[in-house]
Length: 333
Image 1 (cartoon, one colour):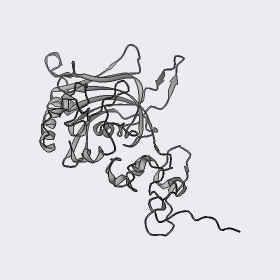
Image 2 (cartoon, rainbow, N blue to C red; image 1 turned 90 degrees about the vertical axis):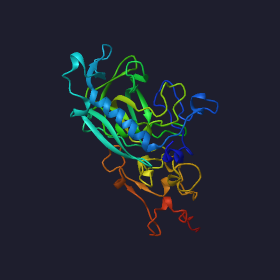
Image 3 (tube, rainbow, N blue to C red; image 1 turned 180 degrees about the vertical axis):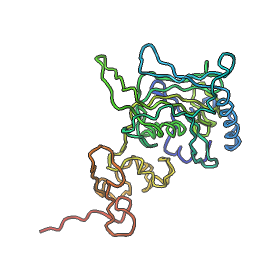
Image 4 (tube, rainbow, N blue to C red; image 1 turned 30 degrees about the horizontal axis):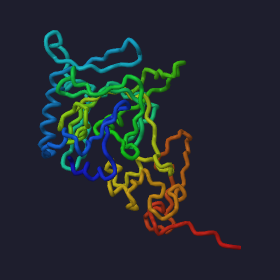
């Protein structure tokens, strides 16, 4: 497992992204599927994965199919360029194919994704620390027809970092954060929701180092070191402030490495990462009482420039991260 993931495991067990069946990536102590794993070099696995992914991208094309039950719901389907499909444009040559560079501990990953539609320009673009409402399908790149390991064709909500033992694999949220949601929705009498047909639509091709690497979810049908594909429809991104302290969770990533579960992101060393800690410096004063928040434009989205990080003693460390600063009791009359 990647060194970065080892550090994160102090706080988190990665879970398979699904609302139906949850799998821990670490497996149980008696899980025979993980007990005989040979741990491999991250760079070696990455090069193999990229060869497999780029071969797939060069030999397959995609098309968009609508579903009979929900005309707004669109599914991305992959097929081989052969026979009657010989004239199709490969995914690798598609104008919709993008690449994002994601820093790992030992490798800088090329993360390929299809941006077929970004979503509505006026909608919130989620960060790695937010929540999203979406539909999705998870595929094993080795066999698209038989190795679909999970899907939901009704909208589900995913919290990217999760709370406690919950969270999304990095390759998935790194792709989702390049999209926006729909401009609105219509609630139906049966409790379902139809989103406007301008939501984000895409797919991502994930090297195993940004998925489960050697330690795969028990019972998922995924093998160690498998690269994966997810197709998705993003309906809404929702900014998260998990601990309700006034600081959006993405701003509590103090070392800016897009991971929230490391010791670097647990300022007071109490085992609770900052984004879940209502008193980040452990001085007995709530973080919410050591900052000032003003949603100036009233859009419900808090940006860094809408927070005053008070620094009472002007030492360069804001009060909420300075255990030497505490609220003085009022003078007695």
